Length: 407
Image (cartoon, rainbow, N blue to C red; front, top):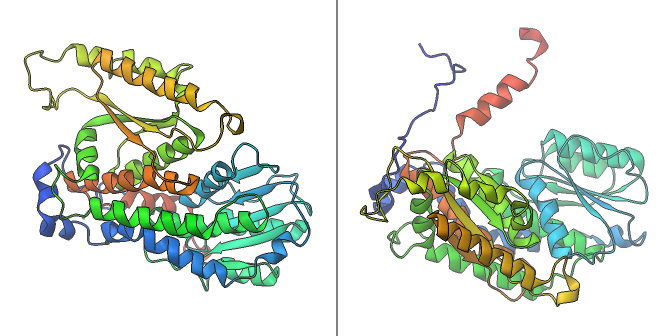
């Protein structure tokens, strides 16, 4: 009998991606029993629902004491990413530092002059709960975001702090937009971001349209997510963002590729990559691997015996005037052009996704939607259930203390 913790439970699927699995809608949906494709397609609905739920909560108390000294967004995983999104949407001229905190409690300097936003899709995250408790104890203004009826809501009630409910219908990684919109609206109440109702509506529409383009019934040659997934199959993905906004999207893609498709990924800012990591293009998985390719081979065929890099560049282009950004947009664009040229010279395959939309929020959505679906299609092409990740459950079981009665 197999020990449930011996490392083999749930390790199934196949090492080589099978494109035919992505063109058989019935089989594909059967391999997604948890409905991750459906949950990801609900992104636009999440935006609308979470905005409506946030509108029912009186957030004016957040601003009653004026501008805070700092804002701490506390959460882990997808919830933690919302802090980076708030900071990015607020922009470099935000008058208040916005700090993402991904461990238990809050920084030691947090006090009555600060605001803590505790975020947890389940409402049970130890990191968010500890942050909420510490904020209440230190007299900081608190707003909690999570599953209604959870311990986090009870803690917010005890602290007389606003709580925004986010109904949980899928794993947290499929609830990014349900968590993000309340965080942004809390930031708006504090005067830190300018997010209009039109921005929210246009972002929801963008996500709806991308879900339609990436629908399971669309064949690989017309489905941008399936095409991206098949391009990444069997590779080591390297995902770089040209701007702070694109870098947030790059890190999101890395998270979903790791969790859904179980792929090792490197992600970060293109500016940082240019200081050293761009050397990967010359390495044993980059130029050296590509130099061994048969020049007469079909360029679209992959030698499964050789692991190669696959570069994904997320480009922004920016909306803000040149003097309202960390770096001039022209610098970011030249850097993106340069890395694409370097990859081409070394034979390293490169996919480019370019942001679209009239607001920072919509542009972020345009860089997140297709990669979210691509991570699911890559999992399904390998015969993996994108929702069931046994190692995550086993990690929690092995790291949590056993009840006293059975120790």
